[in-house]
Image 1 (cartoon, rainbow, N blue to C red):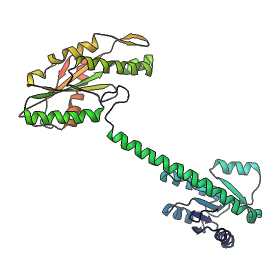
Image 2 (image 1 turned 180 degrees about the vertical axis):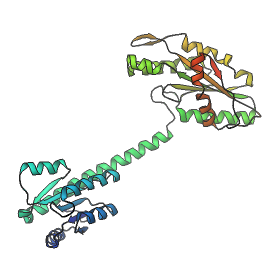
Image 3 (image 1 turned 30 degrees about the vertical axis):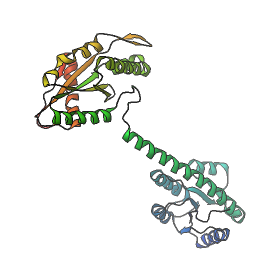
Image 4 (image 1 turned 180 degrees about the horizontal axis):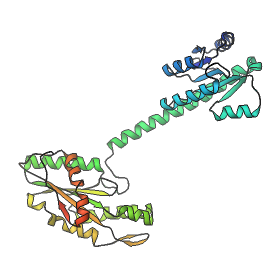
Length: 321
């Protein structure tokens, strides 16, 4: 049974031919039929409301059926839609048809046999266009769902630590805690300087092994109440609350620096050593409160200095954050 709501567009510069096609389709039960007398008119109508099936004459002035098909495919790419294109042709030969298929044409109807071929071809186009557009819609919905999940995801898939979004949420909580209860909070950003070098030398598998190993070691080295997250490709961050600002000093985190730089990690390529740099920022009660993202970005900017000095770089907060 035909789908009466199937959107069909007939493109032909010959009114008689369009009338014959339209009458045949109407008699078969199709109700949504539009007519365009040129390829340009068809494109304008298609932009307003895409057709599911387009029946077009191959030979038309200004723009032929092949060029029309190309333009329709370009439009469909932008709208996640598929238009099943059938060309009317008096041309014969495998080479001619092969060129048309390469240009994106779906099917042909010979003008000499149009009365016998039109409806069977349209029935097939109906089924195919519905299937393809249903799949496109399902893919779009899946992509939207994945985007929504990603927008709320708080876990780094590689290390199973929190991700940047998670870290910023917990950092905001820590800053709020300092504001209401006093004390201080520290933000330590750790960067693995030679991660790309290790990846280039040993491959992505070893690179992933190193990141997982760093995550496990950090969990062993920090306090249970500290927050650890992977905030970049080669960077981690730790948020910790302290009784006063004197606990937010480089010496308080020397064990982390030494624990990563002085003890190798076991990988499938043997024991490998990383070069880790650390930058440290803090928030103290009775000071202006920074935005979490601004604070984290400020500390991250000092990683290069930490790499050069091989020390934990203490960051002095400026009024801009």
